[in-house]
Length: 379
Image 1 (cartoon, rainbow, N blue to C red):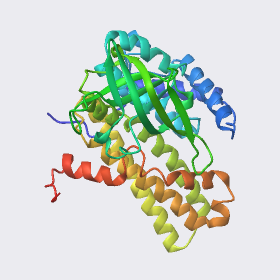
Image 2: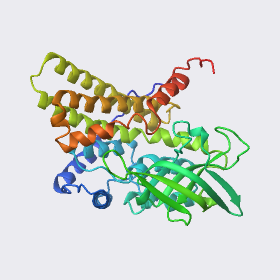
Image 3: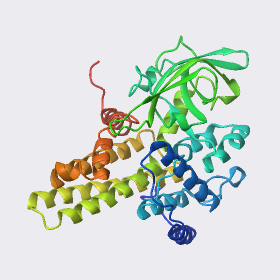
Image 4: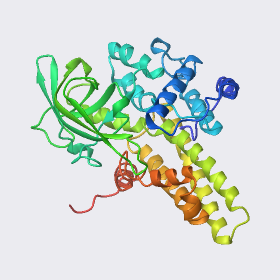
């Protein structure tokens, strides 16, 4: 079987592209607030407008609010939002990351309950994977869930949880069998963030925004019917979930970053040979990243995606983003980089991209082990 080398867009997707472009041109949302909570409110309203126009969940089954289109349709929306400079989708973690595993592993009742409210951002989702002692080493999860009748009783801590204060649901990886080690004995459970026993502690970023939180669980109860997949099979669900979190997000992100690279190239103009070489190298990285993400989306659409494939996307994205803003600092100088808020914020934000969603070191290990099948070194 010959696999598609890249994602293909047919007449239906191109007609959709024209429709989205026309709608975006007539529906400019205006500037986003610098205040985190107000901006979150604006972004929620923006997603509701996109949903009202019929542009979200395009590849989902119509039974759950979708349009029965291909993933290429979702890619068209991601492309057009990014190329137009329009705001991001606030509930993208739900739409890009959690909706696919709910569709794959969820019961019909779960699909009907969880999917439609994702679309209009009436229920925002977060992700409970990382822990203080289990960041990149996800298999070391310690948060425990004990069965009590038809419920789990959950105790532990999750950290670096994005948008936790805004979220209704948390897709959590918990340990349900303490006698098992590492990947075994884990379960994926959907937890209501309004449940008694949950305490949030915002973690201020270097940009002074509380987008991350520590989340503490003190005997929090969640029905066993909220298990995604089967009890004890959480690792398989987690790996599938992580494969989806990189596809459409990386597509949209690399386009937004390339817009800033274009800005930087204009600012540099007819610069020195080292400066132009730096800009040229960055364009090369972005060309490779673009080709890779379309290849990944094609394999996702064909159902041929292999474990570890998207680690390449994640690694390239980290290198592209950090390289871009480091170059901006070097080429524009600290007075410009720290005097213009968007360059400064982006420079500071970019420091963390090689850590979250698995460090660059972990991504290299996955690529070596699962894709290249290189022999493991001595332990």
